[in-house]
Image (cartoon, rainbow, N blue to C red; front, side, top):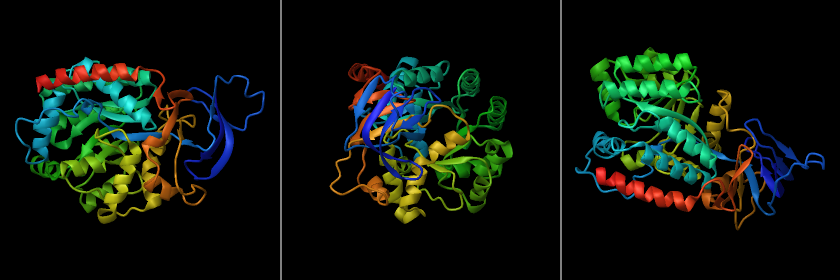
Length: 420
């Protein structure tokens, strides 16, 4: 057990402040004991002095892409993309087709390290490696387990690389869900035909899972759906049964009309906002209008810093969304509600961050939001506890050799880039 001494605990739901010693027990069902008595303290293995520091629930990412980890600094595409579809074709689909399992492993290790050092202890990931499908999800899961970061994974099933690859994606998903918690991933409506969509929904029903799919990230997704299926994207997904699952995640949802927004709000599905990715791809701005309260935040593979993602959602939302201080924090924390409401393991009370927050102004009851949006950053994360175990100790990774992994990931990146 870990004892956090003399810290200020900030309840993630009520934002109440409490000065206390906190005993953290390990395991999926681990708990917190405030100001433990001597008997409860007998099994302490580590004491961390948190004097002057703040302790709160660790963070979680609602939509990530491990496969993009080796992209930073890669050579420019052979053709300068002129629209979103060409960004996919000449950048991301070119990259994911070159990945092998060794590259996937180091992408996952690097991502998990980056998450942990940013205070993120749980990640919902959406993976693609069409010529290294078999075993890819277990490879990612093992890498995340090694670092100590919880996960809910899926494979991005798509017809874009042919029906054989789509079949492999379905088989990889079924195999993975037989032994681990996860989702049934689909790329987007415009690369998923009716037969693949039907099989994916059936698999989600069998596995008591949900669908994780990009939705109307770009206008092309809607245009394609109308031209090929004579309906809009959400209508198509609703008719196929994809919105019936409370575990379903709809990423982006930028270009939905009023009717589609009503279908989303009236469904069991969750929406995940990825502001910085949308800005980078120039696809539009997120609006929560008519979508209901089930909105969480992700990074879409841009980075692993959820505090940064929240700030971006707030600042961009000034002009394009209905969002305030409390609403931003609610979206930031909604991923926990998604996980809890669906009985997904690994995000319990014993996931914590310790913040050494060097603020020039007081942080206290009643002004947390101002510090959350304008002060607290990932650089303030000093210790991270995942499922009751320390995974970052005074800004140093505990379970893995960060330097060695990054050195090897450099080699894997160069090998990848040579293939692009």
